[in-house]
Image (cartoon, rainbow, N blue to C red; front, side, top):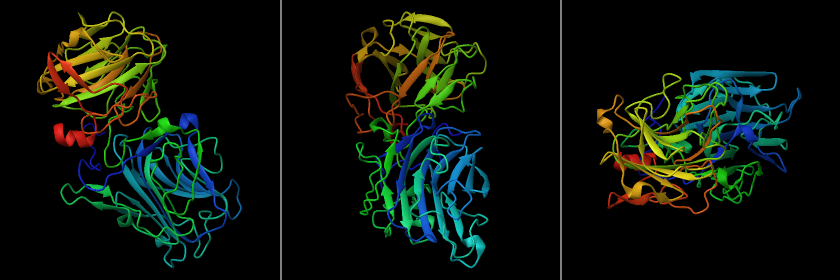
Length: 466
């Protein structure tokens, strides 16, 4: 589990990817298209950068084509299941033996097919971050695949049942090449300074008649193909709020479902929404995927259902037992909805006003001066005087994580915004001074009489301030 900077995320410099698309399986998000005429069904390449939001036994389709049934055009596609990547054809399939469990990192996946190859192992090639995996072929030599046919094609769903088996996570730079079996170097390269696998500009590739390039930069047409072919996809259950700036070149923090003591709590909308369990799992805490030890950082969150005993703030310790709610230890600080106090070591310190359902609470973490500030709907609490916190270097872990939680048996639904993607609709659109993030309220404040600039928790800002 990566908690600081995932190894396959470019921190700074190079080609920049502006947007990704957030898929949520709970709302059946996917894109689909049926081509008017078939392309090269023997030779093609599909490439995408993905960031997972969930692990476990649910089927998460990345890409598929065909129909349900046992005919020649039965479904073919790739999906994630039990942390493995599966190649699937109705009636057969296989999986890579490697697992892909890091929900804080971006992976580059390339599926490269050429059924004209005489050597069976060369007919289907899979590249993960430029590592080649040869899968047992599911195709005979010179066989036409369902991909590039005039049957339905789906991104984020399985064509045999588009009502289920949807992807949970983010995708960016989704590219399809009609007529060529390409390797990963057509879509990425190693950064010469860091050695990190990173994307390159694919706009100059030869896409072929049915080729497409989905960059997700048009929030009003998320399925728009920018390859020049106008092979646009139909958008299903995805809206402008699902457009994200959390990408393979600037990785933003989200909530971390792997660092969650209560298994019954649920995470959704790209790990921007946390729902506690209202029967046995109260005192829950959900932490950010990225921890920080220096710099100034901002996030905001809205409790949309019940703020009775809601709490949010920072923690340097993982939750290890039912009583260890946010603010129960000396190395955690939680702003408490009831009374507007800050809790640490199970003690309350008067700080601000009580907040109610749908208030947007801002947390400003200043690790250069060891202070935490809080705002309620943009109004800085405690007259802008910060609450003193233990220096990160003096904590057990050496890092603080932004966090939300609860202190009751009422269901809490926290909609969080770390800047890359938001669990609630942002109506104003504030960025930090580097131009990163999309916030309801400004990350800049005057705290303790001093103008201070806070930043979105993302890898490009970490490279500069972390």
